[in-house]
Image (cartoon, rainbow, N blue to C red; front, top):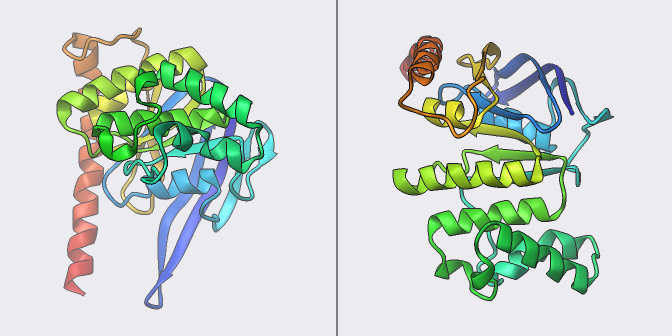
Length: 260
């Protein structure tokens, strides 16, 4: 489904060449749930936005279902941390926005919106506005809006990062339920080791800048996963050992930059 080859991204900042990503190679199968895990500033979100077509790479290639990515497209949908809902639109109108932009007939838009709001447990809130909703409910609307356009790839950039711990756990369970129902391919960015291991079929650990894929952790445990189990603890230790080295490198980079 997703092929990323030799991907690179460079920025010029104040006359200096900053290498954000270098030599990224990733393969993701159809219906697979893959998490990107790495220290702050390693380029996880940059990589996601390049796959979304929102940022152009400096080198390499991306193909979705065999087609090269040259910009945003209807085969991909992005869910961000900040919900990005239109406050002047109702919940239903927010879900239908992408369909309306594509010229989908009103009857079809309404049917799709109603189905998805039932799927995310918000059928009774269709006529409400975003300010009536909790953070978790807003994120469910964002997920419904992303699914409405029927993407083959769902890109999620720390979608639960702003939620409290209890709501975050509930949303993780909700996302897995929705994923099982619609079987979309998912690329999910997170800072949380536990979240990555709880959600993903695979966890790709990235290095400090320039971001590369340092290691792959396959999570074979069946869902729902026991986060207190022995297998989960062993995977958590493996991920923590890999990540700790990169966090230390990232802090060293920040200290050097601050001293210049």
